[in-house]
Length: 287
Image (cartoon, rainbow, N blue to C red):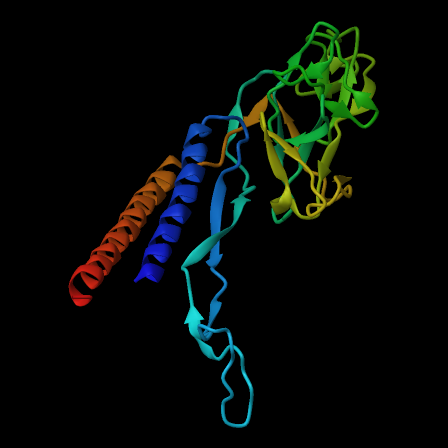
């Protein structure tokens, strides 16, 4: 009976962790490029029970000597294996803001792509492309951290830059007024386009082991591997004037929340039942 109480309490703890993850998903449903988390469980390692004499002296069965004869197995329900981040592509939102960027992953590519941002703690990965222009002309996050290019922080001119789908950034001091002038990028004529840099896009070998650090940043771990560049054929597209929505479905999260509440209640009732049976055992059977 005491085992049943422990099993019920363990089940309630699991559902509490799951509820925290769901609440975090719902809190970030409107956050740009947020990736939902899923709680992964596994069976609690079975414990072997052994019998010992009160004096600690083992008995000698026929033909062998065993100080701890095997009695059976004890399972304590499940345990949290990991909180797994799902990197499925979010919906596309058109903003027409030149400072908004979105990574469009290639279909069938398992490894998600990330922008590289330099923070106070070092280089971090992010899917959020909601950038702004600071006073020095650098593309930065709302927190003030610069977006990294292959040659360092990206510095551009106000209202006079274009980003191609391959991540190349062009600036020019003059914009052509005649149709035959310069190069056409999204119906804008650049007389003498100058490529200043290329957006630094990275991925890791095992994305599921990336750690979330807040502010939509991810930090690589020894398990995830160090960030590395894509091959040219696998490199994702960069969309200027678009943002990626979160991949959280409110309906799915609400359904899972109902499941968690029911599972939590079932474990609670199991604990109450075992507690009542234990009380009867102590108060009635012992008489």
